[in-house]
Length: 224
Image (cartoon, rainbow, N blue to C red; front, side):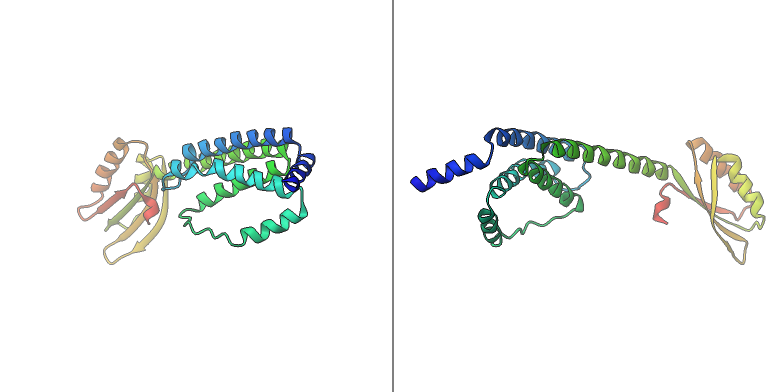
């Protein structure tokens, strides 16, 4: 009992309890922020809410461990031996999950090491950068989704006339492939249509090229 009291006294003299409780509270708040962001903006197909429930205890336990071991070299070495028997066997199905786990552990490390300002600045900043990056990718994906794949098989050999026909009805036309066949041309275009009316008028114009002209329009060009 005397040894425990001596250890407790040494521990409290080494670690400022006020700083510990402040760090504990900040860790909890920032872990909840990470949890909210992951549930709201994460793209993993698994149950994000269930997975995000691990962030709070993981951050707090990490902070507690770092706070304890930083005060004693002996405890640090003992922790290495104790954790060597721990095996993490849960399957990580999405790299995004691993990213948020590292972020949560990093939060616990920063707070346990007493780097409160670093944690308060870095975590919101990382989440802000992730939000901007994801928003940029979604806008790019949205623009790509608006593209239209048009394939034309015709006995006409005037490429300029066919390209001009598409340009007259669509705001964006880009020739991606041209094959000469025994009967004429096989053309593939990447286009952009603003509405169904433009596609309808283009279809009528392509039909008027010749009786043997065949065409197809697909709104998923990434398949090709």
